[in-house]
Every structure is written in C-alpha cells, then in structure tokens.
Image (cartoon, rainbow, N blue to C red; front, side, top):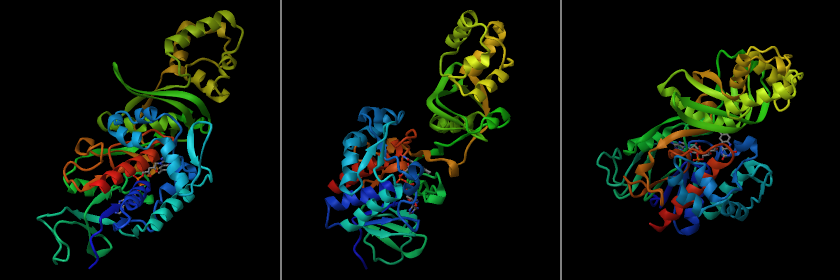
Amino acid sequence: MSAPADLLAIGAGPAGLTAALAFKRRNPAARVVVADRMGEPGAKLAVTGGGRGNLSRDIHPDDLVRAFAPSDRFVAPAIRAFPPTALRAFFRGIGVPTVVEPGGGIYPASQSAPAVRDALAAAARRAGVEFRMGAAVCRLEPPDSSDSIETTDSIDSSSWRAYFASSPSPLAARRVLLAAGGQSAPALGSDGSGFALARALGHRIVAPVPGLAPILVDDAPWISALAGVSLPDAALRLAMPQRLLRESRGPLLFTHRGLSGPAALDISAALSRALAHTDPFTLYLAVLPAPRDKFRALLDTLRRTDGARPLRRALAPPLPQRLADAMLSLAGVPPDTPAARLAAPAADRLATALCALPLTVTRTATFAESMVTSGGVYLPEVHPKTLASRLHPTLSFAGEILDVAGPTGGYNLHWAFASALLAATATARS
Ligand SMILES: Cc1cc2nc3c(=O)[nH]c(=O)nc-3n(C[C@H](O)[C@H](O)[C@H](O)COP(=O)(O)OP(=O)(O)OC[C@H]3O[C@@H](n4cnc5c(N)ncnc54)[C@H](O)[C@@H]3O)c2cc1C
C-alpha cells in the first residue's frame, strides 16, 4: 500500500498544475498527486487565446481585481499576492518568457499555448509531482467519513479517499485541492463533475451558466447579412424596465447567428442568467456607443450644417458602409436621403437604431461554445485568504470551479494561476 498523498490536486488544468507545482516546491519531501480525467494535462490551456494563450493583462492589480465584480472582494487576496508582474516572473522561471501586446494582453513570447502547458507540466514533473491521467475522480470521501464505501482498512480514516471511475482502488490523501474547472468546452475536460464532487461534500453550487459565449439572435436576418462586419467599439446593455442590469463595451463582431467579440462575450453570462427568469429578453445594441439623446441632437446639427450630404455617407465612416445602410433601413430611412430631408420622427428612429436598438434574444450559446462557466462553488463557503473550504478544513479550491468569472482577455487564466498559488501556499503552511 502506498503512503497517502500529502496533496491530491483534482484537475491538471492551469489551476491544478500550478497548485501541485507550488505545493511541491514548498514541501519537496511531500507526495503530491495530480489526477485528471483526460489523457493529457492542460487540454484546455493548450487551446486558449486562439492557440496563443492570453495569460493575463498588463494592468494595475486593482484594475484586475475590479474586473471580477461582483466577486472582486473575494478574488482580491489571490490577485494582490500574485499580480501580473509576479505572473510574468513565475513563467520566466519555468522557461516561458512573456510579452505584452499593444492591447495590454500578456502572451508567451513563443505565441504558443501548448508550449505554456508543456512547460508547466514539465516543471511539475521535474519537481516530483506524480501524474495520474485518464483518472476521473467520481467520488470523494472526507476524513472520518461515516459512510465510507471502502471495504478494507488499508486507508487510515484520517485521510481523504478519492475514488476513480477507472480503478477499484481509492487514493488516500491528507489534503485535497479541487481544481476541476467548470463545464465549458467539456470535450477539453471540465465537464461539471467537479461541481458534483463539491455538492456531494455539502457545498452549495451557484447554478452554472455559459459565460464568454456568443449571443444568438433569432429572427434578425439583417444580422446574418452583416456576418463578418466588426466594430472597434460598440455597447450592449441588458436592462429591465427602469433598471440597467449590465453593460459591456468593446469590439463587436456580427456573425451568421448573432453577435460575438468581447462586447458580446462579456455580457453573455448576465444574459444567460436573465434568460433563466425572463424568456425572451431584450438586449439593447449601440453601434455608436453615445447617449441616444446626444446623437439625436447631432442629427439636428447635421441637418443644418451639412444638409446636402446623403445620410449613408454621413454615417460611414465612422460605421462600415454595410452597417450604416442596414441601420438606415431598420429605421425606415432610404439610405440616400440628404441629411436636411430627415424628418423629426425618422431622426428619432435612426437615433434609436444606432444607439439603443432593441434585440430580442431567446438563448445564448451552449456550454460547448462557451469559454468560461459563470457560477460554481458558492463563495461564502470558502475562505478568500486561503481558498480553503469552510466546511472541510483540508479541502481547498482553485480556478474556475469557484463562482468567479472574469471578462475575456486573460483575466480567467490569471485567476486560475493566482488562486492556485494562494491555495497551494496556504495549504502548504497548514
Ligand atoms: C477555447 C477557449 C479559449 C480560452 N482562452 C482563454 C484565454 O486566452 N485567456 C484566458 O484567460 N482564459 C481563456 N479561456 C478560459 C480558461 O481556459 C479557463 O478559465 C481556465 O482553463 C480555467 O482553469 P482551471 O484549471 O480552473 O480549469 P480547466 O482548465 O477547465 O481544468 C480543469 C481540469 O480538471 C479536469 N477534471 C474535471 N473534472 C474532473 C474529475 N472529476 N476528475 C479528474 N479530473 C477532472 C479536466 O479534465 C481539466 O483538465 C479559454 C477557454 C476556452 C474554452
């Protein structure tokens, strides 16, 4: 019988690998095992950032923390202890120099996410971490559990028992780190089974919904006709009567099925939640992200100062011509109408189409098409300064399994690494 592991990390994604490596570095004599249901570690990490791996952002740690609102207070200890400068130093230390791209994204200098995954896994192996691949954990029994299904007394009752779908013998471990991710892109490993493990241990799970997913807009053929058109700056607003629920702003892409790009991805989780209560839901699109009334006043000025100009020319630029024509058509304004001939009701309709166009949305894309899962282990049941469970002192969490989801652009990987380091450091001390 082998000795119980000092730490079992469930999930060899960025969080599990980083935690296993950090724990082993702090306790070189410890037995650290990382188990993953997939045949290779970090399958998802290897495809991030379009295969280039957007690891973090070169911004002030306070801004990084704020981007995680409403979970900002929870993520603060982990991110402050491991800001972007520390992340870059950590990766340099395992042979992955990084670069900052003009938009602020931190990427490996090799531009290769698989190389990041390989370096992380190799560093963990070099440090002496044991890998169990193809090992899906299907049941976890806490120490001194009264409902043990283990029939022999080979495992002392002060250890955790992890049962694998592929093997009849459980693994004993003194501490467990659950880093099994969410349930987005399940073909890459995280299939939601981590939530089931946490729930079986008594943790509440905030209902998972797809986050960072494209928005599907049915019955809007004008959108599919614009497929491929993109805007550098647009806004989407999710609002109830009298209440703005969420706003996102940034680049937007029209697709055959709806909207994508950061502005759409960043609002998708809030939209998924809204749709769970109210279906369909109205989303307001501003292809010109200015207050509607301000733009309406601008149209009046245009009528007076440049009245001979056809409206389709006045709008493009700043808009791409195809989009300007589509907006005029939605507002019921013939595209070649000279600005001076724009009647007040038509100007009202045009201002609405450009700055607050209502779109009826009935669904967002599925988990399979989403990049992160919003929802997960309920944060009040986890200590933010150690990421240890408040229900089981020798259980910790890291990464996407927690009810933490950041916007697109490196925030989620930063959270995976930072939370793993905090959990590992605190666990190694305990
Ligand atoms: C296509 C795509 C591109 C992305 N690009 C970026 C990007 O550029 N930048 C960014 O910041 N974020 C990006 N993300 C999000 C980012 O990949 C995740 O937030 C991050 O991988 C989460 O890390 P994690 O370790 O918590 O979970 P995961 O990476 O999901 O790893 C969890 C691991 O646990 C294993 N596992 C699950 N259940 C069990 C079980 N029961 N037993 C054993 N093992 C189990 C899984 O096989 C998996 O390997 C992207 C996501 C996708 C899908």
